[in-house]
Amino acid sequence: MRIVVIGSGFGGLAAAIRLVVQGHDVRIVEKLGQPGGRAAVFRQDGFTFDAGPTIITAPWLIHELFAYGGRVSTDYLNLVALDPYYNVRFEDGSVFRYNGQHEEILRQVRAFSPGDVDGYERFARKTVDIFQAGFSLIDKPFLKVSDMLRVAPELLRLQSWRTVAGYVNRYIRDERLRQVFSFHPLLVGGNPFQTTSIYALIHHLEKAWGVWFAMGGTGALVQGLARLFTDLGGTLQLNAEVAAIEVAPGTRRATGVRLTSGEVLAADAVVSNGDVANTYLHLVAPQHRPVNTDTRITRRRYSMSLFVIYFGTNRRYEDIAHHEILMGPRYKGLLEDIFTNKRLSEDFSLYLHRPTATDPSLAPDGCDAWYVLSPVPHLGGDVDWATAGPRYRNAIMAHLEARYLPGLSKHLVTERVISPPYFRDTLNSHVGSAFSVEPTLMQSAWFRPHNRSEDIPNLYFAGAGTHPGAGLPGVLSSGKIVADLVGRAEGRIGG
Image (cartoon, rainbow, N blue to C red):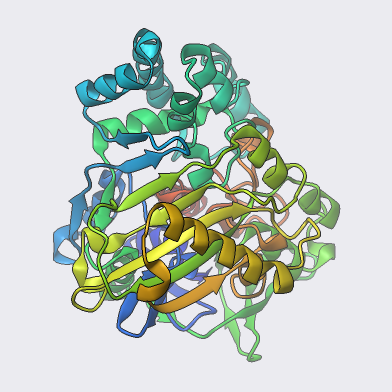
């Protein structure tokens, strides 16, 4: 079959690799001038900045993808384990050094709050159970109500109606430790106080298999997968934005895509790795989607957006780890402002990324490459980023200089800022959401946009907005689901 994949993010690459191995004629069309989509790379003044995800977990999914193509991952990229995974820093100056060593975690829990040791151990054991049940569903499609009913008893047993924060708070009393063990949903676009407790499985996933980094940055992983795809015979077409998915009248079948250049690419199936909402709202004409109407798409809840400052310094800050989580003075209240009130607060919590702690080649000699990321409301609020952005940037950089990076303003040599309009205008993300559909219980599994369209049976979806969700393990697994579904539709064994 001729298959067109819209977008070369990790979900699109994973689907395309598996589909080309199945024997299909696969072409990826990518709007940007480089592969990766949200995982693009910015290069300026000798510095390399990853624009997309920088935390790699479940490394076996990457190795498995290369093996499926008959190749060895180490011939294409070099993954290294990180320790610590994160330093979690608090306003009172305390620091939790988060890694996978159980005794080290216990020692730090004891130092923070001796009365929480037993509670943490119970929580950690529970996350093993949640992981075993939840991760088994990560590469299974949920296309029918019966698919959901089949797993409902297990979800009830695991108390998946609770939120991650609610689940953690049952076992741990110290407010700082509650934040340490509940912040992970933010890495996939979720509010810990609204995200289903199934996502507590991330704790066990990281403890058991680590947090990894691709030398050369996440962009090196993108390039490795893109090279694997083309080595296997696939075609990657850059600077090719899709204007519409062509649907034959009266057939409910996609016949290909039309690019903004006017070029039409015929296809027997189309896979969208683009934003799910944008795909339905702007690429598929309303008469071809009686199920996925404008109303159904727009009434979903979408994840927060991001404000990110990429910068380089002409000195190194050796006391800062690869990943730093900088907690602000508020936790729940700040998240309510971001997710519910859609209001830009005066305070913030930050993720500070220093990849040169692991790979100095990403900056000139003696320099550090950085980004600092702040979760912010998506464009469904009323923030005027043209005026608010510069003020917000100055507040964040002043905070970093005062507390963590002394002399920052003197050592700053390059900078770039992205805000919610970037996600809307460059990445075609609905309301500028950074992670697409928010991972609440009622927007998970069958309730999430399906991997195969209910309206157009040869239109498939991979990426953050469909099942199983955002994050590298989720989007890679969505690509496997799509390849399996295409294989089943053809009567083949899937990927």
